[in-house]
Amino acid sequence: MVWRKEFLKAFLERDLPQLGFRIPAQSLFRFWSILAHYHGNVWNAAEPARALDISQPTVRQYLDLLTSLFMVRTLPPWHENLLKRQVKAPKVYIRDSGLLHQLLGIASETQLLHHPKLGSSWEGYAIEEALKAIEPDEAYFWATHSGAELDLLVLKNGKRFGIEVKRQDAPRVTPSMRIALADLRLEHLTVLYPGSEVLRPRSENSRRPDRRARESRSERAHPARSAQVRVEVTLTSRHPQNLNFSHCAPHLAHVAPPPVLL
Image (tube, rainbow, N blue to C red; front, side, top):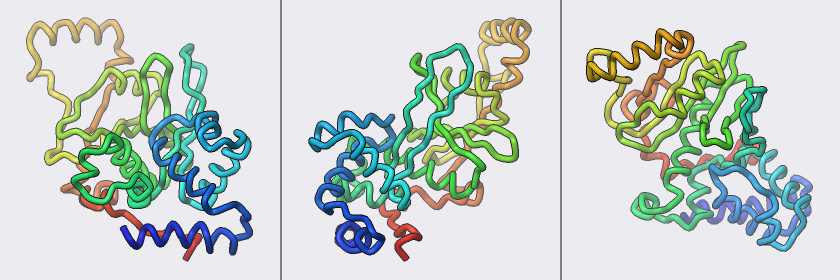
């Protein structure tokens, strides 16, 4: 906690002026603290502008600055002609989970586990580690106004892959995942979660007979849809080599300074 507090102070009061930025340290710190509460949410410049009593162009300037210095990740939305209303504003994440917890005043694992931002904190950590491991050509999130969404859409070598992040012991295949698979034409969908087992979608033999019959009729009517539903629930805590993840404990204190400051 002491190290992170001093890091934030040094970054705002020493490093930024040395890089040629003339922004009051206290103003940027207040904005950064407000931004931490938006972590994992769709960005809306009007609300922090009102809270800080500054203009929206100034808010965008602050966000662009922290993004360019690798402190914040602005994840753009993916949208295409799907005949659905899609979210077209970006999501924002504090890239280092240790600094996020510092800005939120989280001082211990117990506080983290009871904090309302726990799920968003895990989501940002998992997305950041996934992007480092995959090194995609492009990365987006996807969401519609009707509720379907995908936490991370990565494009690599001309193919689309989806990543969904769940902080659950046993995540399940959801309607939103199936919609993302079909509408975005994904090659594969991976679910990242801090569970203790590798889970797979239930096989045909494990389903009730009446349900198997209904789903069989549905598959005959929509063969393309059934062929696209391929979901793998990938373990992150016992098999870190899969995605270059460490055990989920570093989620509390992941505090490597960004390369630009070294």
